[in-house]
Length: 174
Ligand SMILES: C[S@@+](CC[C@H](N)C(=O)[O-])C[C@H]1O[C@@H](n2cnc3c(N)ncnc32)[C@H](O)[C@@H]1O
Image (tube, rainbow, N blue to C red; front, side):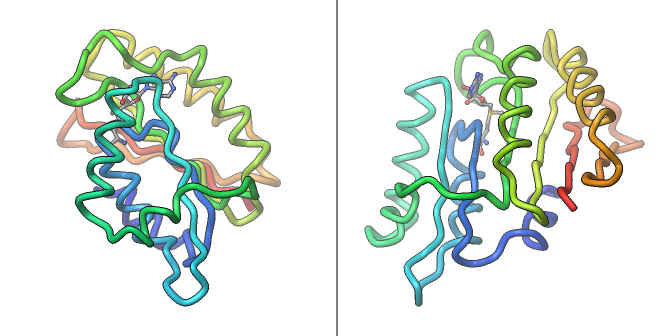
């Protein structure tokens, strides 16, 4: 996944990051592998989701994939965040009616903007294949376009030969 390649250039061992839509837990696991620092025992991932089913799936994936020390890493105190990841849309294999919505996505992006540290990244993957997806893309693009040039570098990756592919959007805080 292309966003994971970008994360690697931003996230450091010992960082605290947020997976704002953890779903099946694949992004949480990828992030935990980036932040976990075996020497200092630092590195935290806050994994959030609106569905209990998603939180259970993420917990299970972490339990299966990590040793117990590592899985404790993602519960800890509040601090500043270098990466906040949003993977929008519905839970793959779950209820397709439970999707992220433009209005609450925008609220979450506003909050993310306030807690991200300089040098950090808000990464958003937007899906356009389901009802409401294109509107959500438009909302995210409008939000991104309004961020100040002095403080933010905002870009999106569009697959020109896959018109319906998910669209990664990157908001780098200078
Ligand atoms: C595309 S999936 C995420 C996939 C996940 N990152 C992974 O690696 O498996 C989108 C997730 O967003 C969640 N979601 C929908 N609305 C939400 C909201 N308002 N707040 C947090 N999560 C939400 C869904 O429950 C779903 O699990």
